[in-house]
Length: 230
Picture (cartoon, rainbow, N blue to C red):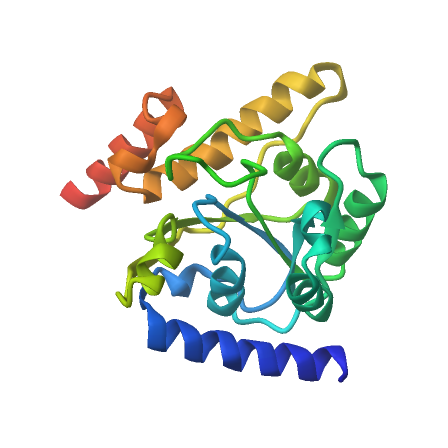
């Protein structure tokens, strides 16, 4: 089966399963660019976010970075390979994965990635790594913040024959300021905090985790409130 056909088949299967087994609400889909490369940066509550975000982004050039530790799961490996996923070794500086991701973005493709790097054990935001900020700077593409709630215990709910409510909120695309060589580490951290604050602003307060009291998040929330009142 060709990769294009596999994408079509998998998208159909995922869509049917989500409609049958869950109740998904998508807010802000009008914020998704219809063309051109961008990074969809999402929080990470549960494994089902991978196919969910893939379906929501709804472009044939969507792929993502996936931890190599999942390669020992045959079905999951086949799904990732069929969707053109990029395997990432999180235990080292994986230059091959970074190069593949950068090339995909520069060609105008979409890359889905969770800045936290792993699933949150509590469902709330945990400290993010600087990799997404680095990729965005290297490829020169905007970022779309994605906030997902309801997936943390969704699989357990489905096994109990319940249909969990899942919400996907998509924020407006934004670009990060450049990273200067002399202040590289500080600039990458600043940009990473910007990404996470924008994701946190889309989440209910109880899921903002370590970013709940971040000054940048307060600025974003205050700005949003001023817009509402104007």
